[in-house]
View 1 (cartoon, helix red, strand yellow):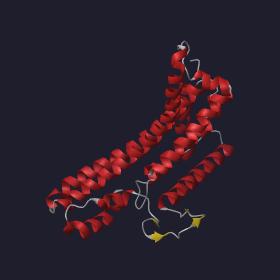
View 2 (spheres, one colour):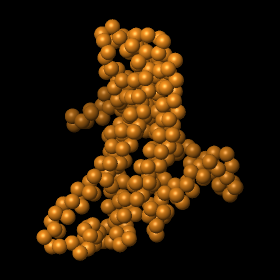
View 3 (spheres, rainbow, N blue to C red):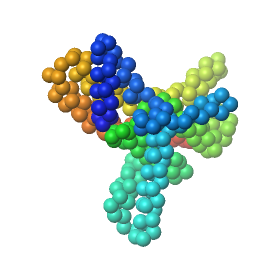
View 4 (cartoon, helix red, strand yellow):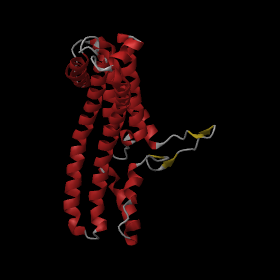
Length: 275
């Protein structure tokens, strides 16, 4: 985000004469039909649906390509030697962390079935988060459509895992606590059903909001220089912006961890309803 400072300055310089207009912040936060903010993407429509390849879509493809190349390299290194080195060693540390500190404790017995999905989610979100911190990058996980899609997939995996373990009727029956009076069953059924829907909603909004908030704060701090129309605040604004940028690195790691942990926790609750 800091790398886009030049574009921010240009936008502010163009609007500073018109008052304290902060709409430029959203211009740099939201998705765009200009790849890397420069190359216009050809518009594609199918049956009236806009399928134009946007900047965030491109960066999701880049994230997927990076993960494919890295893990292909890691897999090939293990074919040569069982002792990991360099990148392979680093990736093994992260994989073991996700397995032993997130998935295994929250799901328990049978966690192996869900480990590949949760590892994929963790590394994909982490890569997308970091891509938004490099020069010219865009954070796909600051797009509510992306986070909602990831949350829906986690929701489907959760329900599928619960149904496969407990059976269709057994799973939904197990959502309602035992010993509930008969007259409360309709109300509890509605409450539990809404609870199922709020979990993916929380996953989507949490990731989206945290990744977006940091970017907005950085742009707002830089914008103070032009809103106040004085360069005396520049050292303070830039210093705080750099501090938030460093904090964003930590947030990128934490949000990938939280999304994976909560997804794993929801799966564990669905699979082991008797615990």
